[in-house]
Image: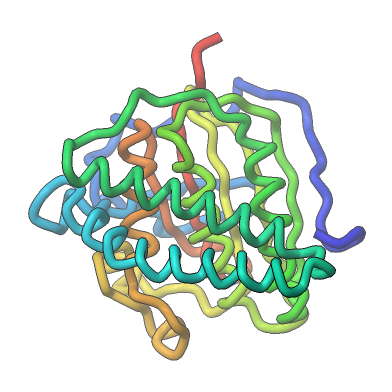
Length: 271
């Protein structure tokens, strides 16, 4: 993020906030609830069904998508390496190659899950650090669209399967930056509720209707605002699957601004 475009403000670590609602309502899009995420008022919030809920098999669809993407990603990496050999003066190439390698690791992990079921045990992750890194990575696209990205939050250590939070935030920030009109702000906020860390991403775009919220996260489904954008309609499904595999969930709801708030929820790591 460029200076002045986004800043991470760490507020006091508060574990006495709202009681977590995990277990209090049945999981599924029918469980519409009011969930305050960060500084935004979210109405009609609902958990997003993951791939295992809507595709035959716990990780089959995600693994199939990963298999289709691995080849093109390898080709992109090779072309970037060749470009680096011809143009060593391009300073951004190492960072881009790092992003490609990170995505390749994630795809291999999804393929492993598809073949053998759930992945390794969750590992600790510094939630605010990951949120800051992903917001910074998406600031290039945000600046090009004249969209501001703000970050605020509480430091928290949560549990995730490797790379789950990174991938989920990539999906949520990508959607938010593209949904927001020029001159608007995407707000990424980290807070603690009960025994869970919440990372909310709120945009000032058109948001979703109740009917769209009920279908969001189903594989290949795309809302009216995303119909003209590139994409497969798998992003939210795979993000929800990764979070569920980590013991968390993905929630969507309307923000007070009229846009959408998407919240990645992960269990806190034990003290």
